[in-house]
Image (tube, rainbow, N blue to C red):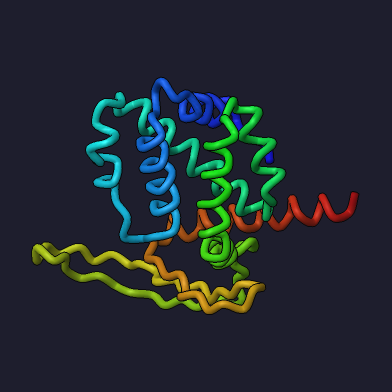
Length: 195
């Protein structure tokens, strides 16, 4: 697991028992897990009474660092030894490492399920449909008399999950600009494949 300097500095602050008491560390660690695992979790958790004495900027930095470490561990399917090594490098003591690993193991399956649902592949456009719309009046009843194109991109993902089609409206100039950019991209791809 490779963590940025910013994340490592946040974890080092979190490891400091002078800044985070054992109870504050526990609350922040649980909050970091809940913010990743529960879509309903909100920032109210950082308002916990145990965390009141900690500067909000430091608190948010450490929360982001812990959440990033958790995500990286889940992304790499890290085992206890890999997590321990990473946290030791950030000056965590044995007790805090054990607590982190216990919390991680408790939430590992849910975390991996959530990370797996995000997907790894971009959407693939399978078809395009369009129609011309002629707008006569706006919602304020002003006369406009301008054409617009309604474009729908039919998409799918290689992981076979269904995705809603992408629809947008654009003027003729915007559509011409889009077509021009797509042609440029196709030419670049063709040139790259011939090398």
